[in-house]
Length: 160
Image 1: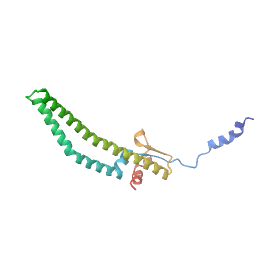
Image 2: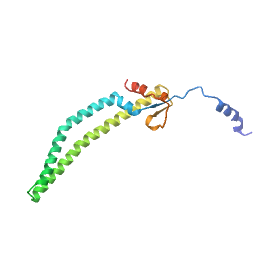
Image 3: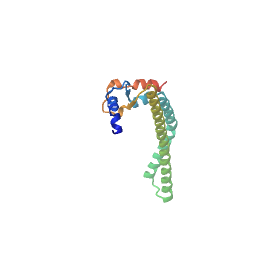
Image 4: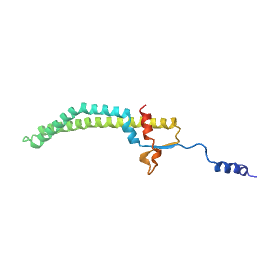
């Protein structure tokens, strides 16, 4: 007799029996969790402070750049050295303005990335602590029963 035939009745019996352990599944609106995270709110305040700190310099450089552009367009002096100096100044101001704006944008990206990483770690910890087999992000599903929405519970867990 083939060895598989000996265990076939056992496999069939196991397949027919219903599991006594319930699979816990839930979904989370991660955008909502991220918005309600205390850590994200603290990072947003830091970002606003950074933007406010840099705004006067951004305004000053922007105004200087506009002045130089206007001077280039309206200059009656067409001497090559003078025009080259103005264009060089314009290029420098443009580069400086781009770098100031990029610094704020980079900080925004870093803050959001850091908050998202922490959120994902907290959702993982929540799932393990509450014995979930699956937790799905809301934005990947076409439909889910609202009874499976654990967003509020996750927000409470994340902000502990």
